[in-house]
Structure formats: C-alpha cells, structure tokens
Length: 181
Length: 181
Image (tube, rainbow over all chains, first blue to last red):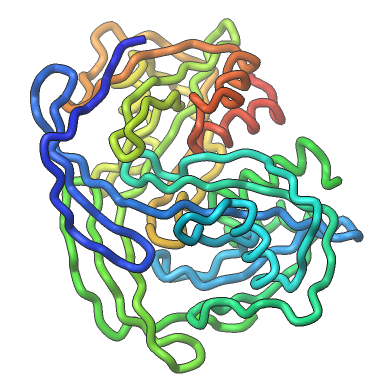
C-alpha cells in the first residue's frame, strides 16, 4: 500500500474551547511539497439507539446552533476526558431519556468528518430499557424534548428532513436492515 | 413543538481558513441564561457511490491528517462557493476516479457533526460510469489511490476499521439494503 503520510512540520494552536480545539498544521506532502491542514480536535462522542418494549425508537428534539435549526436525533453526547464510551452512552441515555439499561450492544463506530475533524462517534443500541426514578440532570445549557416514533414514522421524518444527521440516518437504516430487537 | 431557539447576542470570529472558518457565538438560552457555542463553518460536501458494470464499488484510499491515518472512503469533496452539489459530485468523481456519468442519482443528505459544525453532506450514486480520456486533475495537495471492491469485500474493511467514516459506512449499508443497481 502506497504511503501517503503527511509529516507535521509545525503546529499552530488557534483555539482552545470547552467542546473543540482548533489548530493549523504545516505538513510535508508525499511529493515533498508543503501544505496547510486546518484541524478540529474533538473528544469523541457516543450515540444510542433506544428501542422501547412497544417497538418505538426514542429520539430527542434539540436546537443545533451551528445549523440554526431544530433536529430530531437519537440520544448522543460527548466523551468526558478518559471516559469509556459505554459509560458516556449510559450517562447520556439516562440524562436525555430517563432510562438506563444493563444490555448495551455496540453497533459500530465512525469518524464523522475526517476531512477536517478527528471526532469519532461510537454507536450503541439497547432494546432493554429500565426507567430511572430520579435520573441525572442534563448539562445546564441543554434543552431537549423526547419523541417516541415507530420506524415508519422515523423514515417519514427523514423524508421531511427533520431527521437530518448522519448518525441518526445510519441508525434508521441499521434498524431497517437488522430489525428493532 | 417547543421552541428551543438560541438567539445570538454576539459573534466572535476566531479563524478564517481555506476549508473552514470558526467562530464563538454568545447565545441566549430558552431559560434566559447565556452560554457560548463553538461553531465550525464549512462550505458543505458531496460524496458519490460509484458502482462499476462488474458490480464493484470504487473507493479512494486517502491519508486523513486530522486522524493521522489512511482511510478507505467513497469519492468525496467540498462544494466550491455557489456550486450546485451535482456539479461538485461530477467534478470529484472525474478528478478522483477518472469516470463521469450522465445518470447521477440523489440518495440523501445529512449533517455530519451538528453539535459543532454546519457541514452538510449530499450523497449521490451512479451505476452508469463512462471513462474520461483526459480527466481533470485533483487539487495539488490531494493524493489518493483507487480500489474496486465488491460489497462483501467492503464489509470486511468495515470490520477491520479501514473503512471507518460515516458517509462510507452509510453508503455500504444503503447498498446492502437497496442493492447495487
């Protein structure tokens, strides 16, 4: 396999935030020339497909400031530093839906935007939900509304572009392919 | 539907690059409190699923600096300013694979990272490829290697995490569901 590795000559830090950091790397290309790479550093994230006893999928409706619109998504959240993805998944499930589970199934993982960001998304599924009496609270700047939808209803929202993000589109296609249980 | 809109109080530009811009918005939350949103602005992108006459899918192998690793992906690229996604799709298909098509099918679109970026990805498919004699050249800082794989071979690379990005994982699941033609 050809080696297309780009060697870092210099890293210029641009921004350090609470969600992302940004940097510009000067790199040496395979042909010896140099170029710049604009890179977003992200801690990684999890998303969970929660399926109820009645074969409904639990979604969260949430305002997404980068898009200036409200999207319907499966529950998701960022990894805390050093946190195992399974732990994040259970925390976000409880905070956003009020459920927990002892049967979390790993589905897959993928990079969301490999051209400019290092964010990795770990995807889980559970069809064994247990209500939590006093669920943990969400972050104080998070506002979500829950929706329980059948697979058919979810597909309708895809067509209407209310479901319009990669992880949720993947999740719906996955359920169509593998079934809800 | 509850309105969770976050009103922008102030926008602080952080970075203007050739691929992305970055800004931090001060916002008013639905409860009247304020918060900061770290936002990456991206021009949007397209990806194409090219299927050959022999039922192979054409992939590109490419070094992704943000991940410091080589990924196998379906052909993709950024929108130029004001460019229709179909035009970008045909350009990237020709530059990266040396093929064009007169039958480009729109599959879907999705936001790749709605938590911190506005990137939208338009996904197309074609199973009607025509060789271009003298294809347009790629950007001078792009280096890719082509691979033609059956759907089964592609699924193996997903399991081995050489195929490890959202658009390509979605594409493979889509082909499994809908068939190659």
